[in-house]
Image 1 (cartoon, rainbow, N blue to C red):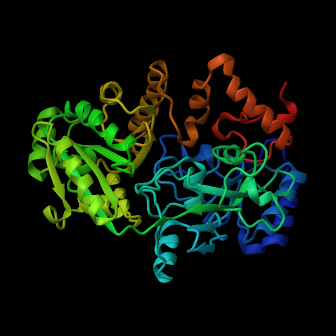
Image 2 (image 1 turned 180 degrees about the vertical axis):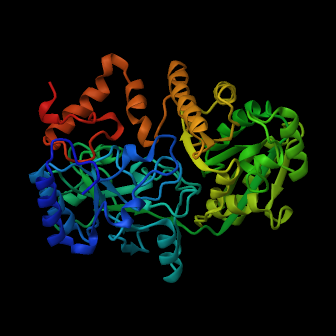
Image 3 (image 1 turned 180 degrees about the horizontal axis):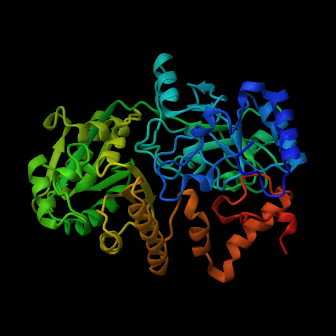
Length: 524
């Protein structure tokens, strides 16, 4: 055993725990550091050293009962465990634990779609169900519903939902469409939330709230329990689907475009998560940075204009879709057309206008719930594969969009990086997604990326913008920005942690809820 052991755990204690876990799941499903498969539990895209999050082992249960037994063993041996679903997050960290020495509880073998009810339009899935798996299941059984997927088609349904992820159809708010949850607690006991707490419940995946406090949200982005099932509401396949794109020729058009979009969103004329992408996000499908510059630093405006002209890409590119009865879709389309025609130079594009265009095609596929891997082309922009997503939330206003765009691009260029970003308008807010791309094999570039991200956190918080999810290495920093009223929210989270997991074995350090190296029972 050469890997770092969990804090306060002896070699003998660790070996005893691993042997106990082997009896539960079988020898081949407990992976320790002398097994080459342990390399799969690393965050290889990050700016931080891989060794800082190296797992001491991984265990792979195949059922809820096995999860319960593993958690009980971890509890009795004081072994910290870090649960993952599919472990295929694209932009916020890989399947590595929060810090070196933790044991990964890998739930990928629990990969069943347990139920799809076509009358009531719901599904129940296990943690290891990926978007491609879910989509293929629906297609195989010819079910009249669409799934809603993240841009990374390899990602997991439950993992994205629990991390407050969003998709691209009218059901794109994944947590809003979640209903019913099954959770293994830190002592190995099993709990169902909401209506599921009623024996023989008929409405577990139908009514979110049940009786008493609504607690599902406590198990999202937290370390309070291990979620083993969730219910999901499914979007009926619409009679008509009309995806479209609007290209804008000036970066300043972002202001007016955002102002015009919001009424369309609030009134549900555009019901899905509307996306406005910057030029370079689009350009990564067609070219690489090295084809335009061999020097350091961000590309100048003159080069961005040349890229836009060569590939017929807007400086900003808006994607959305209309859904519903054909006559309703066409009436709403008249309103959409008239709205965007108010912006000088705006080019409105439909699918028949861009046949074979990979940028339009992959967005249209996402907006009809079809998972794909096109967004991985972003990794080719600079080479080296390093990337971290910075994602602050703001009001869906033109002023805030422009303010964030200029602030974030200025910081990126200060550290020598291109601005590669998009805005996603939800209900009344917008997610601003920056893809910070760097060569992870270049130590200086990795350090600059890390420093750039750290400044972005501070600068955004100073302007009242908080991130909604993040990479492993920045969890504490972002949690500490949510410090209103002397950090009252984080203090409450820690009180809940102390009550639910007094030994502190479940995902210590996740999102700042419990600091690494401390346990709830030692906190003063």
